[in-house]
Length: 124
Image (cartoon, rainbow, N blue to C red; front, side, top):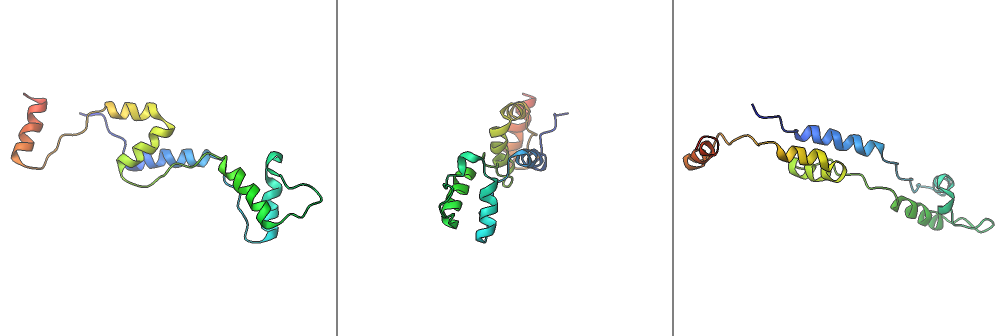
């Protein structure tokens, strides 16, 4: 029997596991207070507003956006099996290479000519 191919659900689970390990983006905040709370949590090199100057929401949001842009982007977890495999290749190229080595199951439906071709590929 053929080695089992990863299902789309298996691949999606691997992608979601990876995304769960990524640092989360800082929220911009709906109010000035929420924005300030996020700004205060930024690493020091992103807290660029000088002490003694007014911390406007716009200035703080610019710093937060700059920080968020440095974070790794999560991989997409939706789409066809092939689209998910492309995303998996970004984070685990070895696993995708192993998957590519596996034989895909032969077609069991289609035109008579297609089926004859499929049989000849294993039993010439």
